[in-house]
Image (cartoon, rainbow, N blue to C red):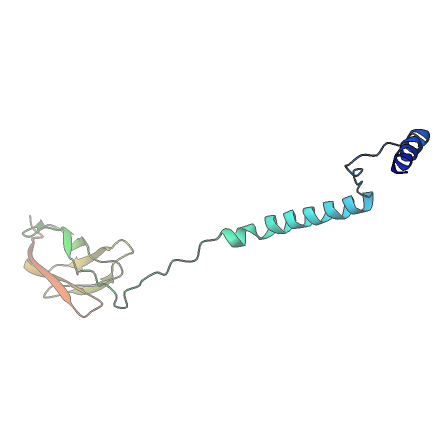
Length: 160
């Protein structure tokens, strides 16, 4: 009887023209599912692109600052006039260089003046001389209370 069942099963297979296979037929995705999947992938890519600069930033580097300010050494360089200059003019131009924005005092026995150096440290002023030998003193004053001076002799002779 077992042979009869097998032959009936074989005959039934042939009669219906059906073929049995071991692998199931492939599944098809619905268009709706494909659209939703595309939207999700696009959304994830957009979020990644939008927030990427925030994730790629390096943490700020801590800067170490010295709590005590560094004071530059006070300088005074006179460029004009030079010691021993003989002037036929009663007024003489004094020029020099020091630290930027520094108070500069110029004085002789008969005249005095004060100026502030510019942003590059340059200064100039005109001082009036008396007849004969004049002792010119130029003094600069630093922010920390220090001062630096230079003295020179200038001669004014109106008859030369």
